[in-house]
Length: 327
Image (tube, rainbow, N blue to C red):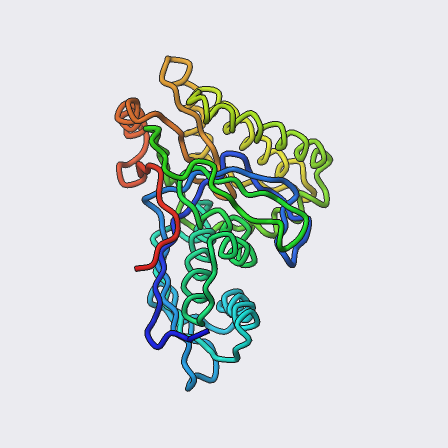
């Protein structure tokens, strides 16, 4: 094992879950209560550089050109501790991260962030991890990061232990001409973190056991739809699964919501457009921004309709993105 003398830089893209992960069976290991399936996106990504240096007396973390305080850096330092333990090293690191994703706004910034950190830090400290091992490591930083190791459609197998919970590519080299249009209704940091929100939902929603059963069925059905290139069935399953996830937030105690007025505006528009013959389906994660699945041939028409109600700079068209890579 040889520690790199030059910085190692990795790029990871965000992923948006079509079958959601909402709740942990094990908080420490970040083992989910359900398996999930996502689409990696090309337009949202994180670049992270890591260099372990003998002269450092603590980790130095730079995020979007700002040196983080010990409190803000705590989650990243904890992750680096895991990497150090794997490598049997006590060296501290310089970490430089540029996030090309609004942070904590429901656009999976932690997924791309910890996937990039997992790849860059493990290679920088001399570990030679394969993608399965990287996926397991990334999961320790953020559950959904486990899926950002791969491109295209990715399934996270929930497993039952640290070794058995990781992502696998379902269809990585995607040739299906589909897009995901993100409507950035609010780029502010959300008030309820995903992690805390999940805990409240798991502990208090009376519908949580039903959610787990439905997710299992949804995952089976959407995989068949993807294989058959059945866009409408895939979209319908994804939209229903998203709304079921958000029903867990509304039925929790205390209840909370990631919707805002513009989120509902987008969802209602999608319903209207679909009723009028334009095939499109929305999904939402833990944040107010709405993502809309649409076939490439209908993307321009969808964007035109969105622009009637939202500024152009709030609408981002993304296609399928790649897995982890070193720059």
